[in-house]
Image (cartoon, rainbow, N blue to C red):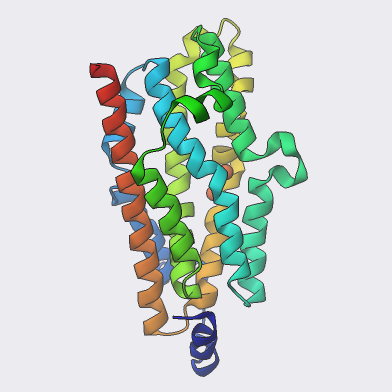
Length: 265
Ligand SMILES: [Fe+2]
Ligand SMILES: [Fe+2]
């Protein structure tokens, strides 16, 4: 459905009454289904949180997750530019601003991620393997990572209801994703002689599980509620949501598979 077509749906349908705290809110109910999805229950998280890995294995995760991470502001901008709904656009702009470090380049999320990686590489005695610029040259991006990024771009540039469902899925799985990534990162804590220094290195994770992802969940919920105007739009939101989670499940399972193969070789 085109943006114009979506606007037409919005104009015809009466705006439903919303109650942010209502458990019967179908948008919030949909959002909470992420917890049982394969996007969060997959082979990658099992591996990442169960044992320490080699720098080569970590580089496979970091190259692919980093590629997704770095493309996300661009993808979210697509959503912002494809809607004329001012309230939804405002919610997504807040999310984008936080991704970009609230205007501080040193706090841009992809920058914080690379800082953590470089610190981990140094403590493992193999800094060069986990430096982003080196990984860009030496570690290939998996087809499932390209599929995730391209699929996101398609979903976010589709009709607004579908795009908002995709963004809802992303942000509601993200808190658990970041928390599990942090759980795995703590396995390397003994490599830091100074425990405070370990926590300083982990700013990428704390920024997310401290406040950011809680805010993004609310922003994505508010955005999707703007486009939930009738049964047809709800189906589109559900479709964007489900398709995005499937892309994530494929992405993580492919990374887990490649990491296990790297250990075997
Ligand atoms: Fe982020
Ligand atoms: Fe987020």
